[in-house]
Every structure is written in structure tokens, then in C-alpha cells.
Image (cartoon, rainbow, N blue to C red):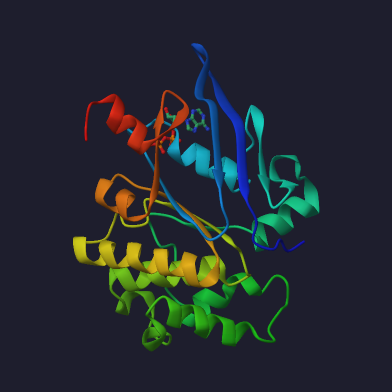
Length: 237
Ligand code: ADP
């Protein structure tokens, strides 16, 4: 199953965890629509459920209730091989840590997710195209230890998209980068969305980055609230 780019619709997502004190609701009805090829930022205090939300969108976790629908496919209902295919091909993750394998070069790291499907024809060319798009083609033979933090993180984006995902979920992708590298990363992500029609959701603590990503939401009491609505409520012009 490979999805063409399509609208992402989150409807009334709830998530509760059972603990010694009973059930705690983290998400209480988060809803969102993301158009193909757009970038969106999610901000919110630590522990507000941002990572949990990204994991649910990317099918790594199931909501307690509600649905995630991508291009007409209900991701939250996928099981077995269809779920495995979705995770492998239709969604890419980037985390605060790059998680590149130290013993592989940049291009070998990017090609790693293509191995299970045994797809080699064209993969090398696509890896080079993605590394070029992310501005690190000249580092394709470098090992992670020889690269800067920004170069490693941009390589991790190329790896996340090598199987053709049109949805990229980034959890604090600039958290370990200095100001300039972080800013470059945001510029590259916005170009990527425009040029490759990839929808990108970025969890960030950086309000300047959130503004540059265009549409912003804050996770407040388990709901997604548009950032301009938060500012209006606080009397900020
Ligand atoms: P954020 O990314 O906004 O910092 P998280 O999504 O990581 O927040 O976590 C939200 C809340 O859910 C936290 O209080 C966290 O402790 C709790 N939580 C996350 N995963 C689990 C789990 N598997 N079991 C119980 N509680 C969890």
C-alpha cells in the first residue's frame, strides 16, 4: 500500500493511560486537518502530550478513541501487514536524536529502510536526490561522526523519506542543534513540503520556528488550539 499525497484528518483523538491513581487523560479530543504539502507546528508544555499525538498520527500508538485518516485510509484501524506497510512506506519520523548508525556512511544510512523490501533499483538515485534536497549530497560518503549536528539531522530526514512517505512527523528536530543549524533545518523542511508535496508536522519548543512553519497549534488540556487563537485569548496582538 503506497498512498498518494492526501489530506490528513484527526478527529476527536483521546488517549488515557492507566496508572496507580486510575486513568489519566492526556489527549481529550484533539482534532486537526492537514492539507497535502503543508507544514504545521505543534507547541505545548512538556508532558502535554505532543509526542503521544505524533505517535498516534504515525501509527506507533493507538488512541483510546477517535480516528486518524490519511488520504481516505483510516490509519487507526490498520492491523498486521497493512499496518507494517504503512509504517514502512507512508510515514517518516525524525526525532531529536538522529539515530543514524555510526558504522554506515550517510548514503548507506539513507538506504537502510529500503533493504526489507529488497528494492534496490532506483533507490540509490532517490537517496542522492533526497540528500541533495537536504543540502548534504557532498557528505554522502561521510560517517555520522564526521558530520555536523545539522548535517546528521538533515540526513535523518532523507532516511525518513526514502521509501516515498508523503507525511513527515518531526519530534523536536532542532532540539540538539545550534541556532543557525536549527534555522537552516526549518528552511529546508518548508522547501521540502513545497517541492516534494510532503506534509510535515513539527513538534517544537521554539516559537520562532513555529511561526515560520506557517500554521501553528498549541496542545492545551488535551486539545489542539490554533496559536493565533491562543494569542487573541491572551490579548496579544
Ligand atoms: P510531551 O511530548 O508533550 O512532553 P508526552 O506525549 O511525552 O508529552 O507525554 C504526555 C504525558 O503522558 C506525560 O505525563 C507522560 O508521562 C505520559 N505518558 C506518555 N507515555 C506513557 C505511557 N506509555 N504510560 C503512561 N504514561 C505515559
